[in-house]
Length: 185
Image (cartoon, rainbow, N blue to C red; front, side, top):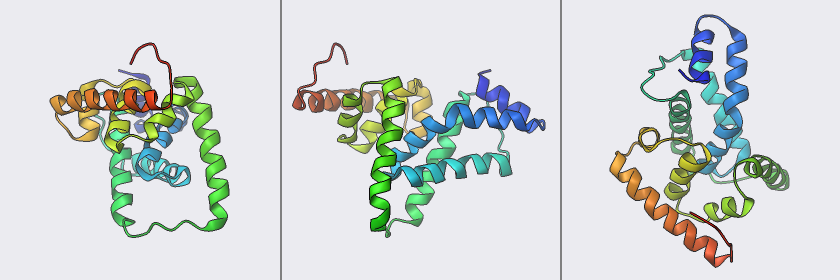
């Protein structure tokens, strides 16, 4: 049982400190994952909060078939999809928020990406098809297995293998356009 699962079990047994551990360990990665769906770090933060709120209020059963992170990201993905469905016709952003949004997103991404991968790779991923970016993110940045990714993205294992192959090729092509020198992809 991974740390998130044991913390969640402790939370269900009444230990509020366990919830603090879960939020601390998973919030940054979840925000960036959700940002890939909505393209706005502020909304991604709200969706992260909504994901944890669902866990707190509904206390869904965690099945140890997959890792805790896979289970949590699946809930987050569903929250993001619900948000996108509700707001599919609204694309306006108040002009006064644009400057703050861009600065905040840049700071958050740089802080997290520097720890995980070079900033150039992340920028190239933003130019990819959203499914390509999502499968690469889950695989390489979050370290999830193809089976776990297939659960989150609601695709079968073969589709994930094919999607990963195409995504790596697209990323390689994008990096070459930018003159990026890489050792292995």
